[in-house]
Length: 301
Image (cartoon, rainbow, N blue to C red):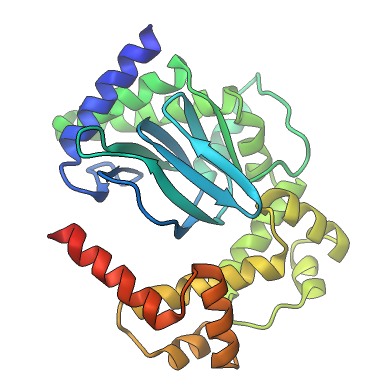
């Protein structure tokens, strides 16, 4: 009952603090809220390391061939940057889809690890995205942090203490072993996270698996195996999704035409870029961008 009461209070707070659709930033930089008043088409996004809580409604998230249904009884942990497709499945103006997202700082987790005595073991290279049942130990610090948004002076002093408690609850919970692997130098998960970081910074460059494996002190076969286990895709597929996501961002922002966007993200052939863009986003670049701009205009109205 305590979990349900806390969830109801948190839902009411977020609905009040998020009066319009979309992502709402807050006075605590790592924390933001999401609201949708209706279901919609799948959208592609890059999920960074973070904690996600569905308070009302539901989202369906696709990572590679794996499907996750994020509902109020669960929390979502993303331990590495992963390209996903997500879709709001349940929402209405009367009962909007409401979510809380908390960005995780891997360095803060690493600093806290020596003080955590009990942690559930995880198999090597656990998936980079996973759901667990929500419990009161995790919900309580989140609720207290959101309450403090109404009192900025208290937030500045108490926020760091609550954040530390939140990270502790994550590390001692069902997902703790997964986060510890990513934060522990020398582990295979940490090596893969370093490979992901390099790809994020150099996605425009040609990818040579043997060189990338050497950068993170792994063999090519080991990198490929553990990379797929964590991200549900190969390094080459991951790079391709990074390129397509960035090209889409450039096009939506109106910063360049299709051929220029293709070249900027690393494609030599605009026609190949358009084919892969259509396959990934479900429509050619110009049609997709037009649809996204129309949706933004309607949402703003």
